[in-house]
Amino acid sequence: MALLLCLALTAALARGCLHCHGNFSEKFSFYRHHVNLKSWWVGDIPVSGSLLTDWSQDTMKELHLAIPAEITWEKLNQVANVVYQKMDQLYQGKLYFPGYFPNELRAIFREQAHLIQKAIIESRIDCQRHCGIFQYETISCTNCTNSHVVCFGYSCESSAEWEAAVQGLLQHINNWSKQNTNTSLISPSFRCLEPPHLANLTLENASECLMQH
Image (cartoon, rainbow, N blue to C red; front, top):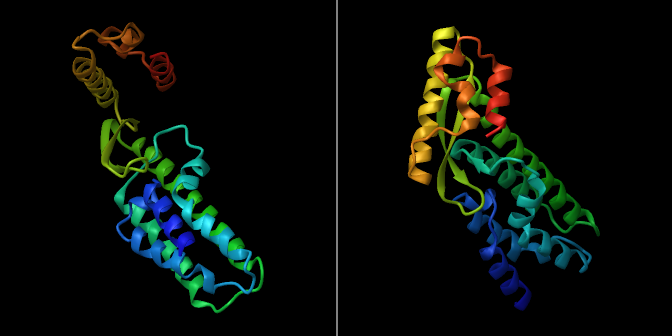
């Protein structure tokens, strides 16, 4: 009983992408409370319990992302459905031989982390299919709050669209600057994006300019 209480309290404090899903608490509460029925070997129980307890925080460590862990609701639902389906199938079996159950949990965990990582990166890549500033709604895996990602797409079909896209980027930077520093001045790093330079601006030059900010 003490072990189960500890597992439940620790899980409640954890945060992670899957933790933000509406069915997470109910699903993982069931998984934790039935973990002692899944292995012939008593040593598997604390190992499996630890895996389930640390699932969320270990997910954040496993992602290895250089960008914020923000996922769309649609993709979060897709990942959750895969994880719950595999976990439910694992729990439908009877007692497993020693070592099998925690190994299967680790496999599901790694697949889940890969799916989340892929979903987050794919959403960022999809942004490049737009021209100019683009925004999409997400949920923050860190604290499960609604958020949004603002990105810049390079898929412009004409020089006019490209010029409008860069001007929109400058406007966005100006607006952000006003909100955060109470100034409308453009950073010197973005002088290369101002109108006199737009005619000969290439994707490589724009990327280099943005990286200097």
